[in-house]
Image (cartoon, one colour):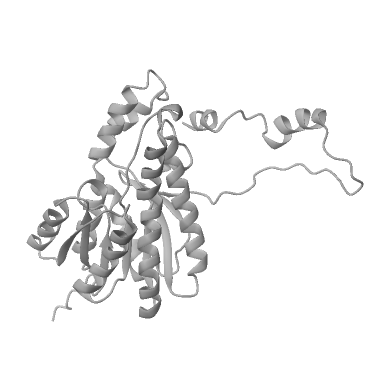
Length: 304
């Protein structure tokens, strides 16, 4: 007698995926559905309905939910729409985000605020709406979307700042929710998407400001589908004890970023009131604190 096939790892789970109309978000929605989750597919356009239909055609369960996470009411409404559709929310995958490749002095205040509204406030609003429901259910999974730009914002100044905020939001939420069976992790996915193609075009207009080798790396990005398997794992019961991490995923590679911390220090006894002098700092900071390092990008280039 043949043993029955085990149920899909996400059977019975309900997921909301924001920004899932194209690119990485679409692949994540498809992957969650393929592993048994019922999925609410969000996008600002009717592409959410197309992805939901694609999931249904493959035998999964999904509905589309059009809306912008930059609007607080619409962001919270997406969580409500998930509960209306399937009665609960087990997985919140915040993928919606926008980018802007431009020099500091060329970015308007309105553009700055628009990026933060979508990339940071959008994450916050969906989390704020979902967490009480997850607590009442006895647990849940939150997966936020950051970017390697959070630590190396090359020609992506404001975008990188928003993703650094997402990382901090993830660290804080993981700690705050640690006793509620709610995990919170972030992923930094990479893959060739419409947004990356637009970024490549923008990099090309920066008059050589794009770092050496970066353009070639971007042009050879893998398909976004290779970034999706990690979210299935993080959304599953197998990852119930994994929280507060920032992962990088794509092209067959999965890695984790170290948590930021002090790496070197010097100490002076100031109990008698004697403060650091300029000469002391000029001598000791470069040699002892920085160890001869000059900048983060020089270190990146040395590591390759």
